[in-house]
Image (cartoon, rainbow, N blue to C red; front, side, top):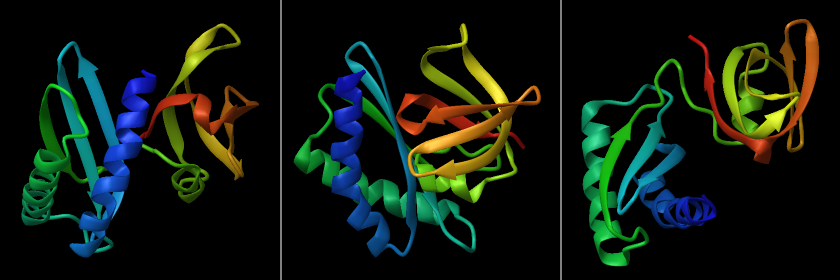
Length: 152
C-alpha cells in the first residue's frame, strides 16, 4: 500500500499543473493495484460542473504525460470523471467543505473494534476530523482514513 501511496503523490505532482492549465480542479486520485494491473482514477471538478469533453481533454493530456514519465509500473487503466454526488473525500480541506454532511468511511486500522463508520462531520481541526456516530463524537486523524465518501 505504501507503494501505491507514493505513486499517488507522484502522479498528483505530475498531473496537477496540466489539470489546472485546463481550468479544472484536481479533486483527487485513486490508484488501485491488483497484481501487475492498476486502475488510476482521476477526479476533476469545476464550479460549473464537469462535462464529458472535460474528462476527454484531461484523459488525453494526462495519458500523454504518463506515457512519457511512466510513474506507474506495469499495465494500468486510466479513468477520468467528476467526483459525483457521493464524492470521495481526499483532503482535510474537503472534509471541512462538508461539515454537517453524512459520510461513509473506512479506516486503515480498526478503532473500537471496527473499520467502517457512518456519521456526520462535526468539525475539522488541522488534520483531525470529528465525526458524530450513534450520538457519540469520534476524533479521527485524516491519515488514518483509507476511504471516505459523502452519503447522497
